[in-house]
Amino acid sequence: MDMQTTRGNGAPQRGGRGQGLLAGAQRFARRPGLLARLMAPALGKLLDRIDAALTEGTIHGTLPDGTPHVLGGRAPGFECNVELRSWNALVRLASNGSVGWYQAWEAGEWWSPDPVPLFALFMQHAERLGDTGRAKGPFRHALRLAHLVNRNTHAGAQKNISAHYDLGNDFYAQWLDPTMSYSSGVSLEDGDLEAGQRRKWTALEQRLGRAEQVLEIGCGWGSLAGHLASRGAQVTAISLSAEQLDWARAEHPGGVDFRMQDYRDTDGRYDAVVSVEMVEALGREYWPTFMDCLARNLKPGGRAAIQYISMRDDLFDAYAASADFIQAYVFPGGLLIRTSEFRRLAEQRGLRWSDQADFGGDYAETLKLWRTNFDSAVAEDRLPAGFDRHFVELWRYYLMYCEGGFRGGGIDVHQVTLINENEGENR
Image (tube, rainbow, N blue to C red; front, side):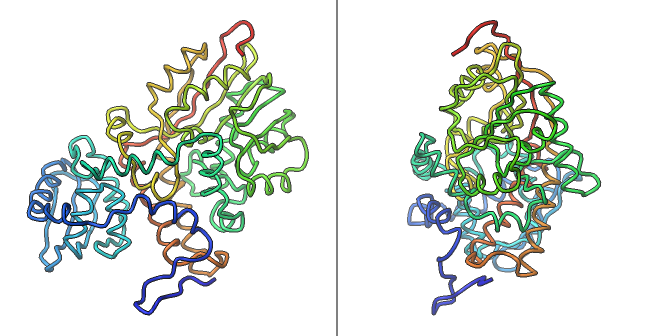
């Protein structure tokens, strides 16, 4: 694999696979200019605010001049080592939030042998930190406007899904488990990723009851649909990813009707609907539309099993007011779910919210195992040709950032059953 080609100044060339995702992120790039540099005298106060916010855990830091600097340390918790190589990193953090903090990492302005506990600390103390690590003023508005370009209209959703999921089946196959499941597994204490994914299928299947006709919204590479079909269900499975559908049709040729279709265009009558970590790609303005889709497609008494990722309710407003690193660089158009609002929308449509299970710790372990697999693929030169070092480092950062978020408790993953209590047609 050609991991990196360089210009005369040693910077990596931006060519090859994954560049569509990276190019889209350039709308979010903000180099610290004069306005940001005016903040430089306040950087010492920024460190003081971070220190005051940490009730647990410790950041063992090194300042650009080599001086040790400890933040927190009041009680046991996450421990991390951070080398601040340029004050510019804090300028980026203070002005552009998590997007700026990634850009500082990419620029070599800070480094850590393991950033996961740092991300976990920031998430754990997010409420106390307030806007300390969030984009502010014109930077926040610029990020929000850039994110709005990625609205999930019919055409926008197709583009956003393709940017992430059409990176190539040969790419994902190198670090996902053999079932090609790209969502949290369940009960991963044994470190067996494939077994954890199969336990997830079992949990979802139990929520569906004895469903004969099943619609899967966002079927990925088809493993859950194939599993349900093998258990006797007639499954219609939809996706907007051409790459994923090609794989699914080849690997699961019998019993599943795989379709390139937007959820908004479905109009069937099913005993059950299942959707695993698809709703994060909707965008908040389309949450009601998704619930309408469930109510429209479920027979009276039908059940929907939904697995979704949430942002903690008290953090959601600040999160949704701008765009974070994930929205800018990894999942264009995405937004995590606010459980209270999602539940209200379901119940307004006669969908009873039942049996919610939370397992964010399992997602942290899933992400850790994915990163281990990804690192092995890189070390063994198994990634397909065309992914340069810039993309590889972005992907590692993404997996670490998400793991830290789950370990810090600000984001969580859930399964819930929605039961259609409407007695007649709901179309």
